Image 1 (cartoon, rainbow, N blue to C red):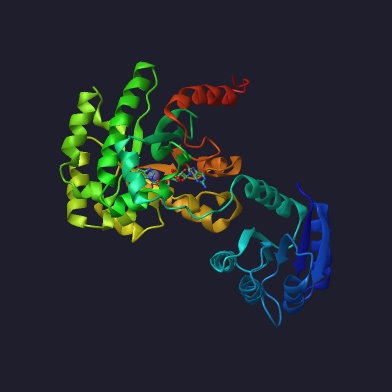
Image 2: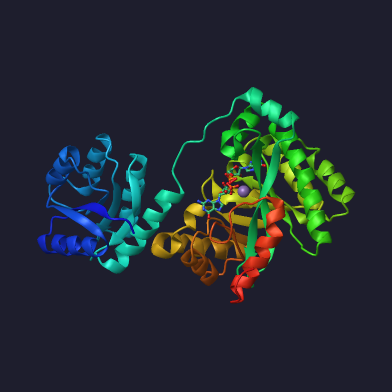
Amino acid sequence: MPAFRALILEDHDFQRRVGAQVLRSCGATEVYEAADGAAALDYVCSSPTPADVLLCDLKMPGMDGLAFLRHIAEHGCASSVILASAVDASIMRAAEIMAKSYGIRMVGAIDKPVSRAKLMPLLLRHFTRQISRPHAAAEQMPLTEIAAGIAARQFLPFYQPKIDVKTGMLVGAEALMRWRHPERGFIPPASFIPLMERNHLIAEVTFDLIKTVLAQIRAWQSAGLSVPVAINVSVESLRDTSLPDRLEAMTSAEGLRPNCLTIEVTETVAMTDVGHSLETLARCRMKGFELSVDDYGTGFSSMQQLTRLPLSELKIDQVFVTGAAEGTILAALLETTIGMAHRLGLKTVAEGIESNEDWNIVAQLGCDIAQGYFIAKPMPAEELAPWYGAWLGKRSGRPAE
Ligand code: G
Ligand code: G
Ligand code: MN
């Protein structure tokens, strides 16, 4: 834990002193105590030594925590914020999202009384994340370069493992496109997929990707590894009602069965050009391909999608999964979604498993499959088998090779 400076905003004298003590015990080298929003705001706006972390109460006489957060956001405050309050969990959640959309860097929220046991895990996670994951908007690559990259076949899949929660065994992988750029190295999809979609390039690139994926599944199979693969498809691919026939031909050309391929669609994609999309998806299912709804819960009329898509799997978006063990709201939504999916006969996949706690809660709630950085990041094809060996070794308590 690095040394850090903190500010505590808390109107209750005793609680403020305890909070400051707790912050020091967590490694704060200096703690500025503010009894009301005005004093805290004054410190944030004029102190030459800004605090790294603000611990902020919500319900206070005069300026409440919500207004305080709006003011510091307007001031361009760069500190990271932790909410500490006794308000209802739903209010806390709204406050967190409000702060994020004002542009504040949120660490998390804890209920009062503040204790080291509650604060320390948040701080630890925050400081490790800050180093490992800087937030930068994806740079968009120029179209001419993308076209040249397509011609030079520089787009290829990375694979992120999907693990059976009960057994710990590999049950598949998601193919995620990467651009192996000759000068820039690997470029993530956010930098080129939107432009490919807008310029009607994505469907053909997706076909190339699927060809590569099928050959890879075949190669894994020959090596004794069964790895069904999920691919992401855009609206343009679904508009093409010949997609199922083409997929079937490609699959059988590799000597594979259709159930080795899962098609992932987001709720928004499935709502666009409904007629063609449903024709394509229903035909894919009739031919035996699997169909998964991606980012479930974040799109457009999620529940309605379940009534019309011929699904075999539901992928719960990471916003409901990451950190679910910390909050009653996320855990409740997770539990209900998993239960509902099972009643509909669907397999459930939890995305965004980032920690042991995330893994434990989805296991406890009966989710079938887990995917996330805690298991593995997306990786090149040739790394999957060695990774799996190490994963199995770790899980059985033996040291990994
Ligand atoms: O790891 P990641 O940055 O790989 O992926 C970011 C997003 O890009 C995901 O939402 C994923 O759905 C999308 N994506 C990744 N690969 C493909 C692809 O091959 N086709 C389409 N349409 N989207 C993809
Ligand atoms: O297709 P979809 O939107 O589900 O794409 C998944 C995205 O999430 C990809 O960008 C992938 O790299 C990313 N991802 C996978 N596992 C994790 C995780 O554990 N945490 C986070 N933050 N992102 C993840
Ligand atoms: Mn996906």
